[in-house]
Structures are given as C-alpha cells and as structure tokens.
Image (cartoon, rainbow, N blue to C red):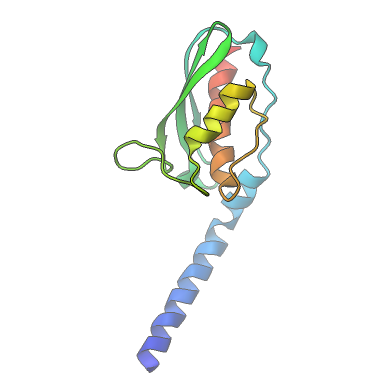
Length: 138
C-alpha cells in the first residue's frame, strides 16, 4: 500500500513539474497575436512558413501555402506534432484537425479565424506558420 502511494505521489509531482515547466511556453503562444494580412495583395506561388514554437518548441510548425489567382488555395503541414507517423493530421479536439483550421483560412481568405476549441495553442502556432509563409507572398 505504501509503495502504491509513493508511486502516485511521484506521478503527481511529475505532472505538476511538467505543468510548471511548460507554463511560459503556453502563456507565450496564448498571447501571440496573429497578423491581419491583406490577402488581396498576395502574389501567386508556393511559400513555406515556419513557427519555431518560441518557448514551447514542441508546438513548432512548418507549413506550405499555395497562392493561386491571388487567393490562398492550399495549406499543407510539412512538420508538426499535429501529424501522425504517416504524416496525416491527428484529431486535436472534438474530431477537428489542423486541416479544418486551414479550411477556415481558405474559405475566409483571412488568418482571423476561430481557433479549434480545446486546441487553441496548437491552432495559433499553425496560424503563425501560415502567417510567416504569407509574409513572403506580399
């Protein structure tokens, strides 16, 4: 019984330490502004954007954005923790993936879209990567 309590205590300390250790990175991304890029001035082409995750490198993302006829027509994740081992988007929350987030960006032709509830930090990290790509397309 004492061993079980000791193990539970160690797990609790480990989880608490993890939360404290990652707090600065979570806070940084939560407060990260997403630029209001004017999509009407984008040049056609394919652009790669990277967000390094700041204080939370595990949230880093690399995306490829395609602009055609002055509109964003495709966004693909090249590198991210939001992909499985086969390179397919994983469910972030409520059945949604980063692909759903990108569909909103394409439909609205704007980065000012709702993030995925329950995956706000991951959503913002990917939007920052798209922003970096679109900065090159201006």
